[in-house]
Image 1 (cartoon, rainbow, N blue to C red):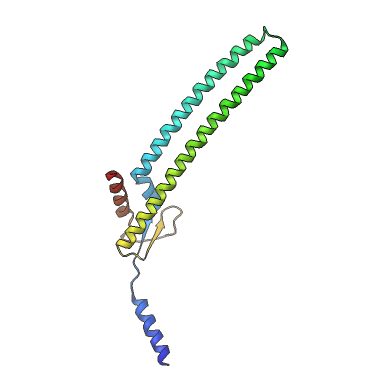
Image 2: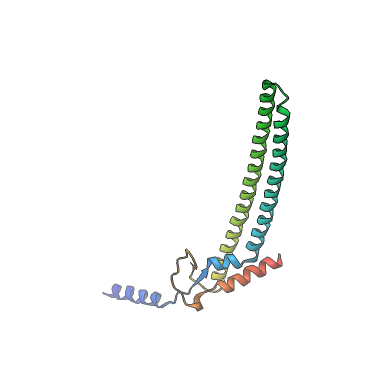
Amino acid sequence: MKNLLLVVFVFGIFSCEQTKMGYVDNVRLMNEYQEKIDIETKYQSKTEALAKKRDSISQAFQIEAQAFQVKSKGLSQEKAQEEYGVLQQKGQFIGQQLQQEEQQLQQQGQTEMDSLISKVRKQVKNYGKTNGYSYILTGGDGGSVLYGSDGDNVTDDILKILNANYQSN
């Protein structure tokens, strides 16, 4: 009986301890984090530059193909087929090169975004530890918080810290 009372007493002490919880609106946090905005802008510029390069190369290749059509009328069928094969291989090579550049650009962007997400998670964790939170949950679209009072929303605090740290670098 004494053991049971002791267990109930100890459980009562621990259950009275307040658990401090907060949540972060991940969508808003990421959309307003300046480093993420800068990364997106950088890769948007690189994507546009690659598209211009692809268009320019495609136009040049199209002109070459049209010139071949005119030239091929004066060639024997065998010679025309041979040159057409060379032109076709060149087109495939150009296409593969451009596709490789695009994939490389996507991988670089994904790597930077993964690093950014890791940095945000570390900052949320540090914020939680520093401010005595037991839990910080995710809110916003796809988050685990369906409702939270505005007082428990720490998005603004974490966003200020992230942007301040980014600007100081």
